[in-house]
Length: 283
Image (cartoon, rainbow, N blue to C red):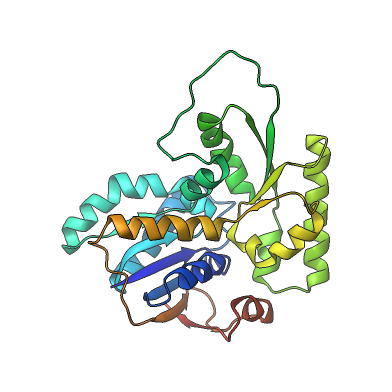
């Protein structure tokens, strides 16, 4: 058995790296759906269909668990797959399988509260709001998942989301750091102007952005903490595996990288981020 990690492209490697560091002996299969990327401009139904096909590929390749290392897929497809597809698919293949997302662990990290917690609605005026800035794709912004779910749990937190329509594509294409730096500074400036001040904390709500987290760190004030999705997901998966021994993550340290797009060597940006050469095979 193994753990599958899925993203529309290479951004999920940021989550994948954190999982490998946390579970170094586990077996992992990474799948990037670069043929159909980006998902941000697709309808919710299209995202569900593509995500289900990717999960099925990973299950057939031996994965017991699939982590959706993509905010758009997690926002639009995760609940549908868990409720309407996974139960039937388990019966069909006769073994335990499941799909997990990255938004739940991120919101737990941002609120400091378990997912099951819902705040009591009170009429008292909140004296001081904790402002969280979220940088993400237009699709994730349109879903309003962070605003809705954080508001359910914390009345003293305000969420402002900044859509970054080109940033994931630029990272995917491995453009020069100066280009990425200018794009990050543009969006940090836009969010700061909309809030009227800098946010108190920030979430990189697209796994691609973690690859250039240092550029966000430079553009934001040094005092502003970043909530890192890969760390939150690694914490959550470790706890999940401890609670669910039916999922065997393997123990041979297998590393496979698969793409629906053009196979071959990763860009220098990704190789530098991963810390070793990366080669993608075709599906």
